[in-house]
Structures are given as structure tokens and as C-alpha cells.
Amino acid sequence: MSVIKNLRLLYQMVSYNLKIIFSGRFVYFLVAAWLFFLIIAGIMLFSNSTPDITDIYDLLIFPGILIMFYPVVYNIQNDKDTRMLEIIFGVPDYRYKVYTLRFVIAILLLLFLMILMAFFSWFSVVKIPVFEMVLQLMSPLFFLACLTFLLTTLIKNGNGAAVVMIIIGLFFFIMNEPLARSKWNVFLNPYNVPIDMNLTIWKNVVHQNRLMMAIGAVIAFLWGLMNLQRREKFV
Image 1 (cartoon, rainbow, N blue to C red):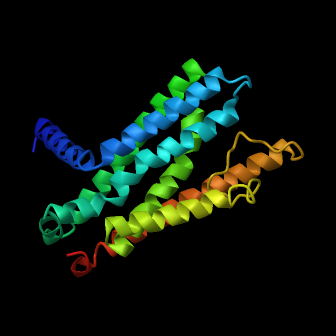
Image 2 (cartoon, helix red, strand yellow):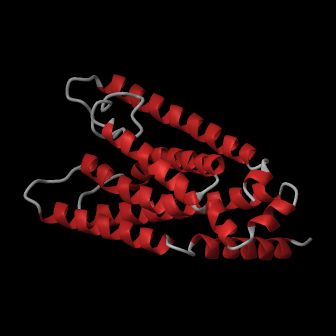
Image 3 (tube, rainbow, N blue to C red):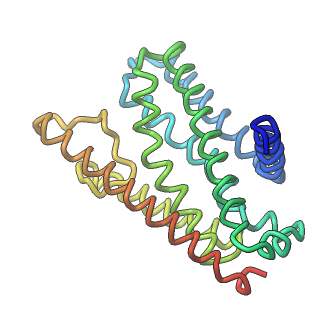
């Protein structure tokens, strides 16, 4: 097969899966994420206090979760609802390629939108290192995306996985304050350096936090792919 045919096939596959990702209620999550971002950014812009890089990180993390949530948690459910699951699972090993491709597309879309929001924050609110900020944001977002994907393969229902993921997310959010300085904090803000902590020690905490989430994300994603072997439990 020629290079042109391969590129054309890849384009068709990506286009088809983008239509599936944007189907359903994803547009509502996308609009909600942008509305939240613009409203909070506007409040920061016109408030008496001066926002800093720490505030921008906290501003961007929640829209990122909203953008990531729907295309990952309803990845398999949408195929089941449209009667496509039997076809995908009927072709040996094809399901891995389909759901891996969709997951990659969802993450790339999330990355693109995070860059847009970060640039908008740099332009309108406060000067920030855009790409460094996005890289730091993608660490917890990628971990949560992989964990969400794992839950969808364990629970085998989009709504059920969404409820469980919301509960887990609330737990992580509640523990954010008690674990503010801990490497176990999923929402650890790397720019919020404790006043009484040495900068070198803090960088080590952030490094360990990011490394553990990267390892956890890989394990969760591979576990999810292994769960796809149990075809009969999905269909």
C-alpha cells in the first residue's frame, strides 16, 4: 500500500472516530469547560488582587477534567448504544486499535485545548510559561484519563463509570488540602511552593508525584486494554 493510501486511510479513521467522540453530550462538556474558564479568568482579571502562576494552574485544571471526562468515560458505551460494539469486538485484536486510537485522539484534543487556554491566560491575565504549564497540567489529567478508561472496562457501563469517577474525583479534591505538600496528592500544584519548605525538597516532591502518576497511568491503561479481552462481558 502506498504512502498516500496509508495517509488517506489514517485520515478516514481519525475523521470517523472524531465524529464518534464529538457525538452525544461532549459539546456540553466542552462549552461548560470554556464558560467556567472564561468566567473565572474574567473574575481574576477585574479583581483587586493580582493573580499569579499558581492561580492559573488552579484555573486550568478543572476545565481540563471536563474536556477529558466525556470522550473517555463514554468511549465504549457509545459503541454499545449504536450497536457497533458487536462489530468491533468481532474482529480479533481490532478493538485494541480502535480504543487506543480514540484515547490518543481525546488526549491530543485535550492537549490542544489546554494550550489554547494557557495562551489565552498568558495574553489576558498574567504572563506564564505556557508549555511548561500545559506539561504540568497534563500529568494529572493523563492519569485521570487512564483511570477513567480502566473504570469503563471494569464497570462496562458509561453512566456507572461516570458516577464512580465523580466519587473518586471528589475524594481526590477533598484530600487536596490535607495532602497539599504530599507526593500522593493528585491535584498537587507544582507552583504553590510552601513558604517553610526548601525549594530543592519541593522539586523532589513534585518529581516523585509526577513519576508515580505516570506509572499509575500506564498500568491503568494497560489493565483496561487487558479487560477488553473479556468480550462476552461487554456485549
